[in-house]
Image 1 (cartoon, rainbow, N blue to C red):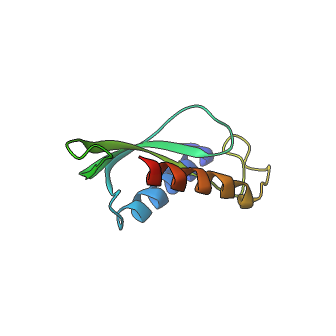
Image 2 (cartoon, rainbow, N blue to C red):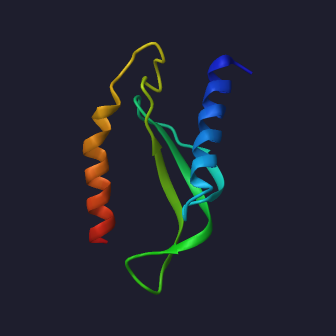
Image 3 (tube, rainbow, N blue to C red):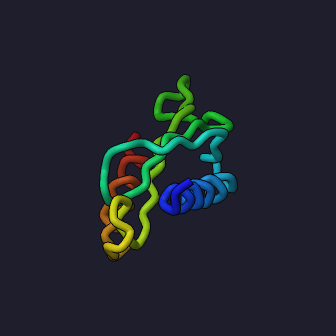
Length: 97
């Protein structure tokens, strides 16, 4: 296994562990392809959560994890403050739907 794969697995485990303490705890976390700056995963929730439609439950979520480096180029450092706008966008979505 390559060093890059080991690092990716460590980040996946870190995300999995963090989510395990939230309502978004996942039974499965799979990396998604695409993008160059962030780690993106498809998570299957252990316990489905309510959606904006009371009769529907959300069973799958997309998880975005940002690090202080590019996903595709670890030597290229980036400032995590770039994620602030994402946070506002996601909070808006959660409160609207």
